[in-house]
Amino acid sequence: MLELLRDGWEYFFRKHLSLTVIGILFVICVTSALSTGFWLPSRLAYLILLGVPVAYYWAKMNSRNLQVTTERPIDRLQEGQDFVERISVKNTGWFTKLWLEVMDPTELPGHTASRVIALGPREMKTWKTSTTATRRGLFSIGPVQVITGDPFGFFRHTTTYGRKSNILVYPRAIELPNFYVPPANLPGEGRFRKRTHYVTPNASGVRPYEFGDSFNRIHWPTTARTGSMMVKLFELDPASDIWVILDLEKSAHVGQGDDSTEEFSIKIAASIARFFLLANRSVGFITYGKRLFVEEAERGSQHYARILEALALATAEGDVPIGTLVSEEAKRFGRHTTVVVITPSTSEDWVASLQFIAERGVKVATVLLEPSTFGGTENSLMVFGALAASEIYSYVVKASDNLTTSLAQGNTPGESAPAWRS
Image 1 (cartoon, rainbow, N blue to C red):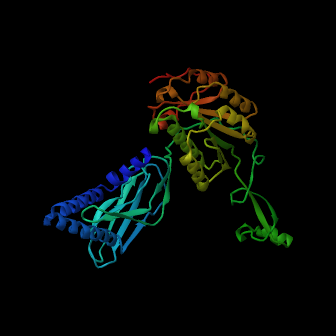
Image 2: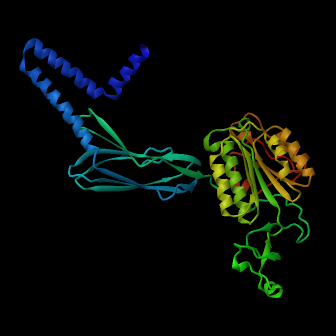
């Protein structure tokens, strides 16, 4: 009963207060006219009885004969770029629309494309809104809503145009001109090459022509000598794979919003991936947030876009410690691999997992975020000491650091620990 009364109050006195007031006034006028016979209450009752349907019809007609179009040229952008949207509203009828509230609901922070307009007969209005994307993630936008009503505010009609769409904002990657990780030990020339379907400067042999092979891969001297079509085989340059492992265990991260270890870790991962892919290196990516995500080591801009997409959607909601993740995925790392681990964890347990793969010949580096500078209660002094004792190359990042500078000054084994609190 109490819930029913609450719903009734919400409906009559919050959502439809004007209509409720006019209804109460109508009852009072009718009661007064019947009890006193005075002409004024009866005239007011007639006016209300006729005016309310007119107001309803006005609001209904005001929402008709409208065309709404939206132009959103891009649905993927990087943090710091501008999202541009253009909205056009046209009145296709012969009656003026006095009050139209155009709303484009969105989750994108800071984006406001809504406004109140009036349209004459056959008139169209267009406006453009530009918003700087300040936060990575997946944000919904639309559909456009046009809200209109009568001059007295008794009735409101909402019409929806278009459909809901999404905007994906990638994390911003920074320049790392002096970033360094220990290089993997490569064998002699020609012994560590990978077959590839790409055309590279390294032609390693020939094979018989197969249907679908491009004509620019035909090796004409061999074709002329053998009398049958032969095509060239290509290999990638000998270079070690880089694997970036991002720690998204929930209990390891501290801080809120843009000043959290989560956001710093994701920005660092994007920057490191960009650094090596621009150098034409093969980069793999592993993380465990809501689920395990593995992107095999590849090259190219499309591969970088896939990594950025994973980072844009990443959240520190995992329950797998970074040490367990490294141990479980260790089979992916060969002797000619460099692994970069990004973590704010203050537990020393995960250092043993890095020691294990390092003993197998894998080169290891870490980017250690100092949680005490992000509002955490613990520091990474003991972890840094364990990394130094294990001769693992490390970077230390604090909340106040410039990432370009802090990721240019690694700590080689044997160096003293940095100052831990800012």
